[in-house]
Amino acid sequence: MCGIMGYVGPQEAAPIIMDGLKRLEYRGYDSAGVAVSNGTIDVRKAEGKIAGLVALLDEKPLEGTVGIGHTRWATHGVPSDLNAHPHTDPTGDFVVVHNGIIENFQTLREELEAGGSVFTSQTDTEILAHLVAQEYDGDLAAAVRKAVERAEGAYALVVMTKREPRKIVAVRKISPLVVGLGDGETFLASDIPAVLHHTRDFLIIEDDELVTITEEGATVETITGDPVDRDVLHVDWDPGQAEKGGFEHFMLKEIHEQPTVITETLGGRLDEDGTAWLEDVEFDDDFARGLDTVWITACGTAYHAGLVGREIFQRVLRLPTIVEYAHEMRYSDPMVKEGDLTIAISQSGETADTLAAARLAAERGTRMLALTNVVGSTLSRYADDVLYTRAGPEISVASTKAYIAMLIGQYLLALRLGVARGSIDRDRATEISHGLNHLPAQVEEILENDEAIVEAAQAIVDADDIYFLGRGLDYAVAMEGSLKLKEISYLHSEAMPAGELKHGTLALITEGVPVIVVVTQRATYDKTISAVQEVKARGGKVVAVAYDTDTEIEKFAEIVLRIPETDDLLAPVNAVVPLQLLAYHVARLRGHDIDQPRNLAKSVTVE
Ligand code: AGP
Image 1: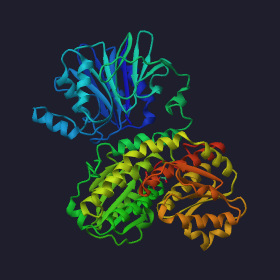
Image 2: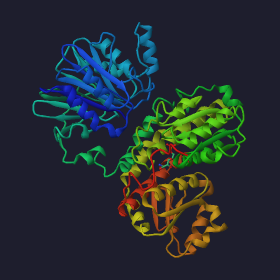
Image 3: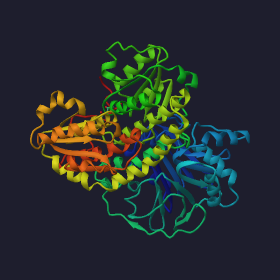
Image 4: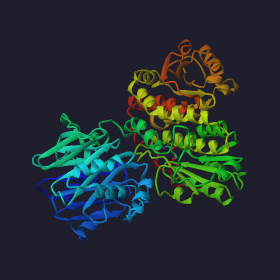
């Protein structure tokens, strides 16, 4: 997620904007820029950290009391000075900053180029500057309104023009935007922390709303021009809380961002009939049809996403899919061969073992696809194809939203390959697409009902050992649930296929030992319940993750963590959320540093 700042008032704008961007640094970014309107539009922008932009401003100061600024988390176009925001139209009279993704930007760019427009960057944002300039007819708000009517996707768009110098216009669709109300000055930001030290009075801009700010204040309208009477929100958070959007920890904030992450990762990539459009995936249908083996390599949570991927690809593509820990694969002389597809999964795109395994697979002739969250990361630069997860920066060491985005990425990839191979018919592809589009609302429903999860956390918080069971896709989810619990609660846990329990581990199940069972898969439901009964017979304490339509599970589980029913193939997306929250609540009860657990790093860039 990018950071946005705007200011109109009596003070110099640049220092206020730079200070606000610094307060948004925690959101992660790869370039930054600022523009002021002082009779003309002046822009300063640079790749890299804000310190570089500060140096640029020291060298070439900006003067003016109206301005906008931006920290960029790249989605279209690698991090560079040219791709940094703000972006202007060719005349330089209009300037924009943008947070989000314009899904139809390629079509719009081609239309504009056909009309003679010339672009200087690879970004989707620059197109918006051209559109606003094209639509301008003396009223900036009207021009912005017309411009975004042509754009599809998620955006918080902020626009200035030298033709109306004491004004900033902004519009929101999915990506966040707030207005800070000062005394004779008005602020705009993507997040409250950026301006909390100037004012505690805010207007939250909602989806499909447009706001015009001047030093007198703010006027909010719907995107169709109807006036909106928005109550002022008085915020009494401390700055630390504010960075977390009012949540106690980044991990909880990121868990709650998951519905938006699913929406954004799917955005513009999936038709109702299951056709997937993967902008940086360049293999053709012949490659898909000729494929006979898929490899997945990753570490940690990304590896667990790959375990889900294995089930997805084997069911949808009917192809052998081999998942390897990267730190094992790189030394195992793997049987990868020319014509195979190797998917390297990495949130950071910098994990040393994953880079090494990916490089090895590529050297042996497989096509290498990077499934990663960081545009321009090392892994993305090695790869033949890249599928970005669009989860935005993940601050908490314990990965949650990036994991779910990895699952979404693999569903998209499976549809792309499966439809090309004819291994799934159009009806099934449509069914999967329909199910995917329902996931944001279903995850939201789980997030709003966490009472049973808190109860389960209280039930296991003092346990010495906790076991996670599941079969097939449920086992893959159980593996991730176990890691989440371990890495932030420091309680020992292990996951295994439910069928494996009786081959040894059952010896450890005694009175009161907690066993978390993920039981969504209809085909193996009865078999998994058999394992649950083995646990019950030894006095184990069973907590189950089950569909809200399951009427049997209460007979076997003391606590049931309900999730909305979905296509079994998609169940991991819903099923993992209660386990993320379970780990979070146990760690909170144990008073741990949840975002920075002991001994762990966000990205293991060493071997
Ligand atoms: C997950 O919660 C951990 N932070 C860790 O296992 C992580 O998933 C692993 O180090 C891989 O990181 P990557 O996705 O950036 O490659």
